[in-house]
Amino acid sequence: MPRCDWADSDPKMQAYHDKEWGHPEHDEQKLFELMSLELMQAGLSWQTVLNKRPALREVFYNFDIQKVSQMDQTDVIRLMQDTRIIRNRLKIEAIINNAKVVYQLKQAGLSLDELLWQTVDYKPCINHFTKPEQVPAKTQTSLELAKKLKKQGFKFLGPTIVYSLMQAAGLVNDHLVGCQA
Image (tube, rainbow, N blue to C red; front, side, top):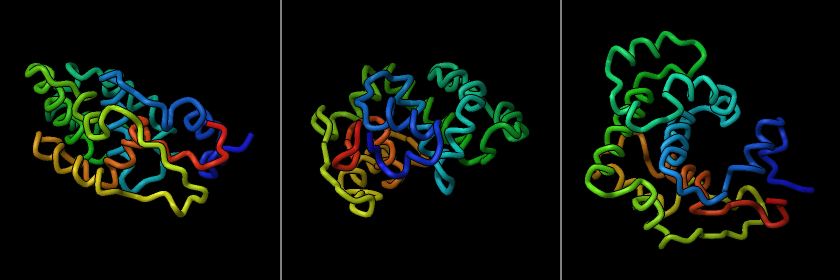
């Protein structure tokens, strides 16, 4: 059965495409993980992120929001030495910062799920692209959501990374027409 071209390069990519990408996600921890992985991808291939995902899950406590929010500069220094992960200080610090923001939102009675999904009126936007070049890197909606996230205190989440997050979490479905997913 056909799938989006980008997913045919590797079994991990195929599994991610078939079982995760574009599926509506509402679990807070999983949304935080996707947010973190998407910002880690900036400037890199998704294949690189998938290959490092097990180690990233380990060092970020399986993306447990409360635990990550308690990490500090000692943890940043330790992670910068870990060759199993993407060692970019700004990205690592952004993940910790973003966990603190999500945790604070939760304390204020707002969820990451609600913050993201209200952007699309709580229902996925299903696109009907037929060619990979039709899929945008960012949209007006991702620009608006990126501004909203920045206002809340999130870091390293510009409109392109946010659009990738929207795709990954199923807020938008950019599977090409004819894709099995």
